[in-house]
Image 1 (cartoon, one colour):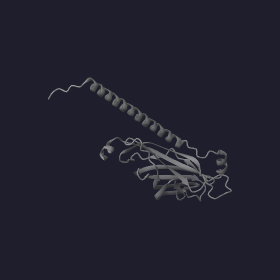
Image 2 (tube, one colour):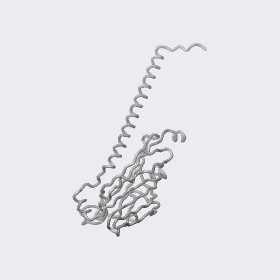
Image 3 (tube, helix red, strand yellow):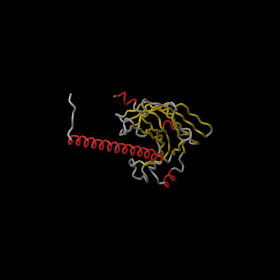
Image 4 (spheres, one colour):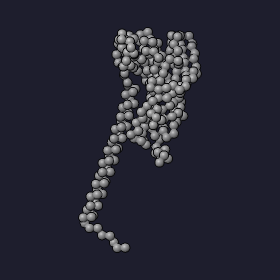
Length: 244
């Protein structure tokens, strides 16, 4: 076989083509890396903004309306992440949720709360005790929350899963306070392909954008909400490679 000899113009075309391809790949890599970086920064901002969220900030109204409300301390402990359904836009978990308050013997929080934008699949009362005027209720809740997942960084994406506990009454009757000390996530929490990064909780006041037919209402329905959130990351490319 004879030696292949390229003409000068052919060599020039090859060099130019190689340079153009290299520049294109480098530019794409820089763009993609920057885009993913800023997407991650956006997730960090989203995490913090939900902890600082102030849906309703009329402090004068809140103070007046909740003057005679019962302050209920709410805590939660996530024990199981049962399902992440990205296609179905939902996730399912199990958590222990507790309520403590003083006075108001008529209050029954375990049977008077719901998961905002979610469904309670099963609720089991674990403890219900009263010592003097101090009340304590503990329940185990299996629930599903509906969520649109952001998969831009697949297969290296992370997801922030948050849920909201809302009482069946407004702030004139119940005001939540977060139990930040005892709330958390089980150290054995696991889900195939993901690892837990962090968790946090908080309480804030939320106003619905409807008067629910009450034309005399000064404010639309205002409630106290408890929120817990966790962040999970893909634990690597292993699961992704297996799916190929």
